Length: 193
Image 1 (cartoon, rainbow, N blue to C red):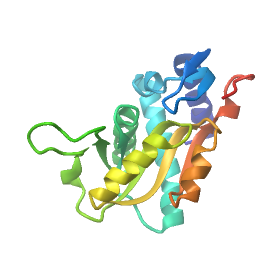
Image 2 (spheres, rainbow, N blue to C red):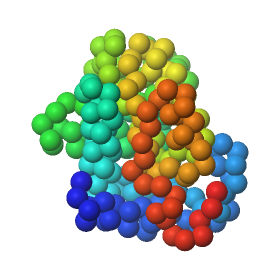
Image 3 (cartoon, rainbow, N blue to C red):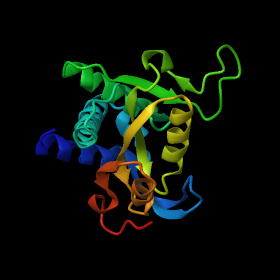
């Protein structure tokens, strides 16, 4: 992704996804800003740029791990459009990187699956987890546990935005290489956790 495309993606995130207001986050922490990255990831231009940015980050993780991922996904709902746009970006670059979705609980009928798209990923497949925003890393940990239980090889994680609240560092300390495309510091001044 070139500098202009990265800048455009940040502009879209600020315009479509960023809100200055007091919110309670999934982690239970309070924040004076909210990022709803789905608004950007579901926008036509945004989806294309998100896919390219995440794929670039995945390729850096792959170089570090010395292996190429076969799958990309994470916890529903935040990771769903991210995984799809990344899979499409990979296909446009001539490679297969299958999207998958980790459910919050097993499917209540049929296969009882935790992971949708699992048939595209043989046991031991190297995969990368994606997350829209990491605060504490809780959703990424949950997806990581589900993927390991499904005998998938998680080589790392990529977040679109790191809130810089210690979550990325905690995941790395726990053994999951994790990188961010953007950090909280790149958003409008005054945003604090």
